[in-house]
Amino acid sequence: MQYKKLDIRCKDLYVQPDFSLKVIDPKNNFQREMPYPRHLMKGMHKRKRLEEFLDYVKFIDPILYKYWSENVYLYLEKRQNDK
Image (spheres, one colour):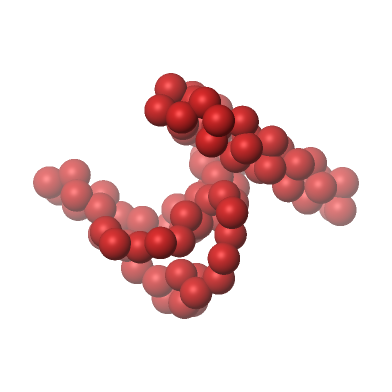
Protein backbone atom coordinates (compact mmCIF):
# COMPACT_ATOMS: atom_id res chain seq x y z
CA MET A 1 0.00 0.00 0.00
CA GLN A 2 3.07 2.22 0.28
CA TYR A 3 1.93 3.92 3.49
CA LYS A 4 4.47 4.61 6.20
CA LYS A 5 1.94 5.22 8.95
CA LEU A 6 1.13 2.34 11.26
CA ASP A 7 -2.17 3.62 12.59
CA ILE A 8 -5.57 3.59 10.94
CA ARG A 9 -9.13 3.47 12.20
CA CYS A 10 -11.00 0.24 11.47
CA LYS A 11 -13.75 2.12 9.65
CA ASP A 12 -11.18 3.53 7.19
CA LEU A 13 -9.99 0.06 6.13
CA TYR A 14 -12.06 -1.91 3.62
CA VAL A 15 -11.58 -5.50 2.51
CA GLN A 16 -12.48 -5.83 -1.17
CA PRO A 17 -14.25 -8.91 -2.61
CA ASP A 18 -10.85 -10.17 -3.85
CA PHE A 19 -9.47 -9.72 -0.27
CA SER A 20 -7.27 -6.79 -1.25
CA LEU A 21 -7.36 -3.80 1.09
CA LYS A 22 -8.64 -0.34 0.32
CA VAL A 23 -7.65 2.47 2.67
CA ILE A 24 -9.38 5.82 2.88
CA ASP A 25 -8.04 8.78 4.83
CA PRO A 26 -10.86 11.29 5.37
CA LYS A 27 -9.11 13.10 8.25
CA ASN A 28 -5.55 13.13 6.87
CA ASN A 29 -4.50 10.75 9.63
CA PHE A 30 -1.51 9.59 7.63
CA GLN A 31 0.29 12.82 8.44
CA ARG A 32 0.49 12.14 12.20
CA GLU A 33 3.23 9.99 13.73
CA MET A 34 2.11 7.15 15.99
CA PRO A 35 4.61 4.50 17.18
CA TYR A 36 1.95 1.78 17.29
CA PRO A 37 -1.46 1.35 15.59
CA ARG A 38 -3.53 2.85 18.43
CA HIS A 39 -6.68 3.63 16.40
CA LEU A 40 -6.64 0.21 14.78
CA MET A 41 -6.18 -1.60 18.09
CA LYS A 42 -8.82 0.56 19.80
CA GLY A 43 -11.23 -0.53 17.07
CA MET A 44 -10.18 -4.16 17.50
CA HIS A 45 -10.78 -3.82 21.25
CA LYS A 46 -14.29 -2.43 20.68
CA ARG A 47 -15.03 -5.39 18.42
CA LYS A 48 -13.59 -7.88 20.95
CA ARG A 49 -10.79 -8.84 18.51
CA LEU A 50 -7.75 -7.21 20.10
CA GLU A 51 -6.41 -10.41 21.66
CA GLU A 52 -6.78 -12.27 18.37
CA PHE A 53 -5.00 -9.46 16.49
CA LEU A 54 -2.17 -9.35 19.04
CA ASP A 55 -1.77 -13.14 18.82
CA TYR A 56 -1.04 -12.75 15.10
CA VAL A 57 1.45 -9.97 15.83
CA LYS A 58 3.12 -12.15 18.49
CA PHE A 59 3.45 -15.01 15.99
CA ILE A 60 5.01 -12.73 13.37
CA ASP A 61 7.18 -10.52 15.61
CA PRO A 62 7.38 -11.17 19.39
CA ILE A 63 9.36 -7.98 20.06
CA LEU A 64 6.84 -5.82 18.23
CA TYR A 65 4.04 -7.66 20.06
CA LYS A 66 5.56 -6.76 23.43
CA TYR A 67 5.91 -3.08 22.50
CA TRP A 68 2.46 -2.75 20.94
CA SER A 69 0.60 -4.70 23.63
CA GLU A 70 2.25 -2.76 26.48
CA ASN A 71 1.37 0.55 24.84
CA VAL A 72 -2.19 -0.28 23.89
CA TYR A 73 -3.06 -1.70 27.31
CA LEU A 74 -1.59 1.38 29.02
CA TYR A 75 -3.65 3.56 26.68
CA LEU A 76 -6.86 1.57 27.28
CA GLU A 77 -6.29 1.63 31.06
CA LYS A 78 -5.73 5.39 31.01
CA ARG A 79 -8.89 5.90 28.95
CA GLN A 80 -10.87 3.79 31.42
CA ASN A 81 -9.50 5.77 34.39
CA ASP A 82 -10.32 9.08 32.69
CA LYS A 83 -14.01 8.17 32.48
